[in-house]
Length: 397
Image (cartoon, rainbow, N blue to C red; front, side, top):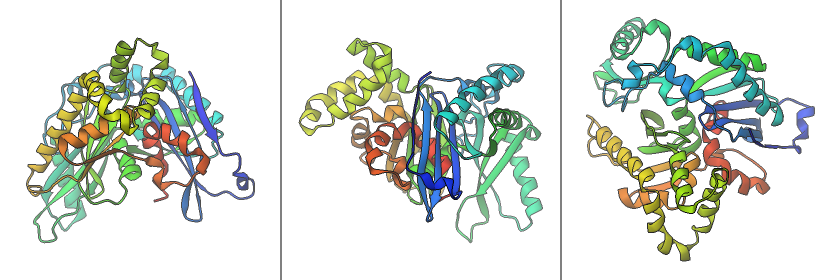
């Protein structure tokens, strides 16, 4: 396991007073990523960060309680994996796994010299039931809660009593007789597992939050336009449609940056341990204007098996969402890319040309203050740290 971290040794005022701090922790298939922000003069300031480069199988633990719904809010249909968990919960949530993840998390936490004692942690897409439910408006909260639970139970792959439920009423016309409610639910057993991992490290689990909410906070903020977030992880790519600042749909496909790495490795005949650095170097080298016209088409041809499924999913998600009642005639504003593979050259431009709309790699550090000299380093790792940054921003923006 390799750790890369940075610690702000100039922030010596921590010795004299304790600023408000928030620790965001992203436990994904690409490893542990954490960011600690301190609030100073009303602004979030980067205090420290750390991450591992070795893959972990937290994503596989999450599939035990797979609650994802294919194109949630569009199709009320469960994915096969949601009906057939891959392995038994008792083995996935064993003391052995708790010890393993706690040891890994603690090593990153200590190496980065974090000070925060409470953490906000991400929930993988596959571990969340996510849907938009349409129901009549009701004056009494008791009636609303009862009807909502009844509607949600019809869609769930397991009893509601086994899940923690969270909901948000979406904005709509005041005169409408119905309302749309965004629902997120997560297994209580998974919440307990996360709590035990963090307790073992000596941290209190302040809250668990979907990756989509963290990414939206870091990359979109208060923008009210329809935006597609494409998170290209190591093993999976997640697609989120964000409307009026709220992630209203999500979908995931089993293709990620490791596939792009395999394709590059095969063409360039390089050792796997050099692949990530090669991807970054290629992005820097091929970004020069004089090289783009020569190399862009050839490079896209090399990674076609990686990029084509992503293009199809973006189109499919937009088509379905914009065909819903109330969304007809609306136009998506942009596609924002994040995740390790988002740094590959020409992908953003290829998506932009395909859909005739703005597409770019998001900058999750834009809402935080940091030392100017760190900009090149933070720019290089920003995409893989976006979820952790969004989590850390939760109590500050």
